[in-house]
Every structure is written in structure tokens, then in C-alpha cells.
Length: 384
Ligand code: SAH
Ligand code: SF4
Image (tube, rainbow, N blue to C red):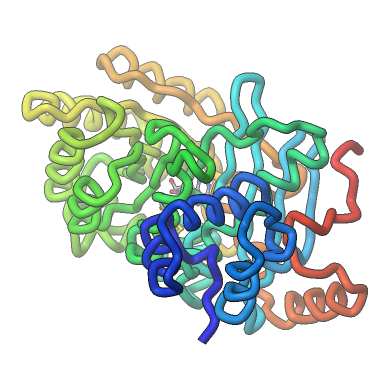
């Protein structure tokens, strides 16, 4: 059986090379060719011995995802839709800012968590992505951007696991992918700049603290169990008390000294003064146990099936003010890429309508868009 080397972090690649009778430094070389140089073709890896290149060609390959579409927003945000087979597609979003470039990555096709306000949740769960499919989003985007911006150095400085899916429900694929993102021989991202966002899979939060501590964002959305049960059904399994306890324990290992709480602002549902005051109280009681946090208020991105509305801006500002007066550092998330549906919670692509995606995928195949390997430039220019 042949192996897609995008699936392997450096440790696993070293084991793979060892089985081929190759020393560890060969694995490092290979890893650098793939991730730092975006090379998918063993024949092009000029400083690897010809014998090794031949050996690799028989047992391994490097294969990214197929691009279905690419949309560029007026604000520079780019959204890619990738085909992951069987009529499923996932989305990846690049968000450029003055001092950083952030890539928002998907971890699953669909999601089983069924949060009330999330269009990925409404779509249901299709399957877990492999490690290679998670890494391939970064591999493709980084090398695409370098090529199109004519940059030799790194373009993507931050990764947030805030695309489609619940990353901690795909734990075994997530960990090697995170390790590759952090590896100095690959993308060399700082642990503080790689963020796992979770709806609250308590046991996995604790495991992540041991296996690969990175920045943690927790989707809170409510100040009490009664409301959170309705918005985030996972709360029925792991209560706020258990979740906040896990967050406190995570901090002992985390690269940052706070947890980010995401809070989606839903008109008339969770955005009243009383909710903000309850949050302040809750966080005060938890601060005594050592929980430090920041709040990120996300204006809800509406979609018809939700039956929900975005809180008015004034309401969001008042809510933020109450939290800030209660001593909680609070930011309101700017919505980016609105014109291309790239904002948080809109990342369902057209997957809801699977037939349409299948047709679009077929059409692109027919026009030979090709595999999204960085070596094959996408025909759509970055400037617009
Ligand atoms: N499953 C993970 C990560 C993906 S969702 C999680 O739930 O944390 C990333 C963020 O987008 C989460 O905070 C989620 O609550 C938020 N989100 C989902 N749907 C949204 C919507 N329609 N509008 C605004 N934010 C949304
Ligand atoms: Fe899944 Fe996150 Fe959406 Fe909830 S908010 S359904 S956990 S992707």
C-alpha cells in the first residue's frame, strides 16, 4: 500500500524512512522539500539520492486536495472550496491583516454537533478529514500565496481550526496535523498562533493539554446550562461546570495564559444585559480557581434555515461594555469576506445541496483544473 506523505508528521515520517532503511536526516530533508518548498514530485527533490527517490516512488506519494472553486473578497479574504470525494466539499479561508496572515482550516466534512446557529451543524456530519487533508489546506494555501504574492518567506503566520467541523471530534488526525504546522522543518508556526476552537469536548481538551498544547478557543455562547443546552447540544453531555473546569486545567499547559471564549451574538436569545451580567459573575467565580479568559463576540452570520437573527450593533456594543466593566477583556470580531460568504459559520459551501456540488466538481474536472498541488498554479489571479 502506498502512503500519502502529507499524512505524516516528522516523527511518523522518520519511522517510515527507517522502514525503508533510511536515516532520520533523510526524513528531515524529505519533510522540508514537501512542506517548506511545496514540492510534490520526488524526482524534483534534487539533493535526495536517486536510489531513495526511486524507492519512494514505489511506496509513497504527495497528494493535495482538488480545488472546486476560489473566491476573492473585496477585502482580500480568499475562500477555497476543496473536493474531498463522494460529493463532499470543505472550505478554507485566508484572512490577510496588516501584521499577520490567518488561515481558517476545516477538520471535518460537516459536523455532528448540531449547534443551533451554525450552518455546518445544520448540514450534518459526513466524515472526518485525514491528517493529510487537514495539512493539505495549509500546504496548498501557503504555497499558492507565496507564488502569487511573489514572496519567498512565510505568508501564513496564524492557523485557526475554525472552519467546518469539530476538531476535537477528529483527534487522532488533528494531532499529527498540528505537529506538522508547528514543526520548524515544515511551517514553524508558533504554538501561540495555532488555535484549536472547540464546542467543548471536555476529555479531549485535557488530552490536548498533554499531547500538543496550542492556543485554545472555546465556543461558549451562553452563561448558563439551560440556554447552552439549547444552543450547543454537546452541553447536555459536558456541562458548563465540567467545561470551565477543563479550561482551567488546560491553562497549566497552554502557550497563552488565557482561554478565548467565543460568543455568537444572537438577537434576543443570548445577547441581553442579564446574560452579560451572568457571564461576568460566572467568570469572577471561576477566576478564583485560576481561569483567565478573554471574550470574542462574534456577530451572528444568519442563514435562512436557522430562524435566528444577528444582534444589532448597538446591542453587541452594550454587551461588550458590560463585560469590559466587569473586568473581562472583550473584542468584537470583525466580519471578513462577507461578500463571498467566508465569515464564521457560513462555511457550509454548497454541500447542503450535494447534487449541485457534485455537478460543479464534475464540471471542474472536465475543464482539467487538476489537483491542487502547489506546483500547478491555479489560473485565477490573486489581484482583482
Ligand atoms: N467546531 C468548532 C470550530 C468551528 S466553528 C467550534 O464550534 O468551536 C468556529 C466558530 O464559528 C465557533 O465559535 C462557532 O460557534 C462560530 N459560528 C458557527 N456558526 C456561526 C454563525 N452562523 N455565525 C457566527 N459564528 C458562528
Ligand atoms: Fe460543529 Fe462548531 Fe458548527 Fe457547532 S459551531 S455545529 S461544533 S462546527
